[in-house]
Length: 400
Image 1: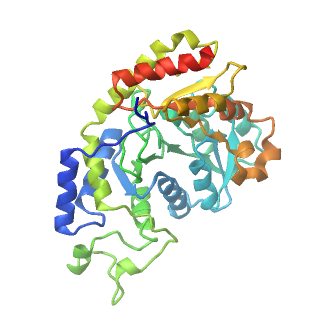
Image 2 (image 1 turned 180 degrees about the horizontal axis):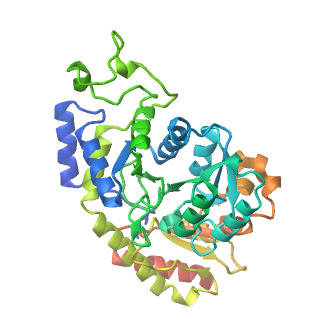
Image 3 (image 1 turned 90 degrees about the horizontal axis):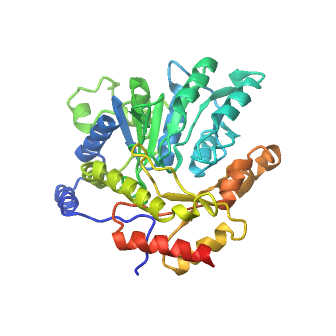
């Protein structure tokens, strides 16, 4: 059996043709394919607008930075942003690197999302809510967070909600797709994710000013987002005497622009999104059926739903006779790629060690999943024999 990866990527003929078109036109900077990808993705998620950038982390940073300049919010640096204690570290990094303060809440064991009861308790215990800017729920592994409860808590307390939907392209909550359940959604198109571009991120929102601010902030905070032709033809409303508006900057921003070939790959991926999500869901169902005898005794299997866009196949080890790390090593020996379900950021990540003492004993579920969570692939390219081999291998490991 060849190595079974967490995810696979194949360049199809349509993608190769588009790459050749870009090469022939010598057009590698953001252009028509990036605009097309933005339009198609916004329509799919259900928002008015989408802004492409170079990574999912950048998407989160752009939204947070834009809130400092947004005419309605004007949120100063130093405010606190609430997030789940366990997730990929990019969520916390986006908050810290934009000079906000992360506040960690424990998670649910069954879906790895922020625990809304603990979130409510935390906010009710705050002396001054004005110290807080917002809530950043994460739809981890494709599982949607309890957005109705989160939005209700946020609205009551004047907080902004930004969805980290990096791993949930197409997941549905209460009839709407994640990324369209709050002020803004942020996505990643990393190679192992459901829609695969390589890197690249996307912001989805219905807020016109946020769209404008993010478009300009990703170009180092420039005054306008007009293209060169619009400026040269005099259509740019920001033309100021002898100064070129693309070289005037009214915000402190970043160079987070994407590349044209990335937008092109995204447009190809969008054409098969229904198929790839259905395949992942079907693969989760098959894996669950094959491993059912271990459910509740050795492992906690993922819940199956046709509304979840699965990043991977997550497992929580509950058999105390075998460790997650032992299982990971055995899977590697059997050529089955695997990953831990991240860590408790404030208590298990060295980069956030300064929070360890404060959060010790407060994020027990996050620590438990950090020690016992693991995931393998459920991607759309898995073959039937590979799924059967994965089931057989996991049974053999626990049979030892």
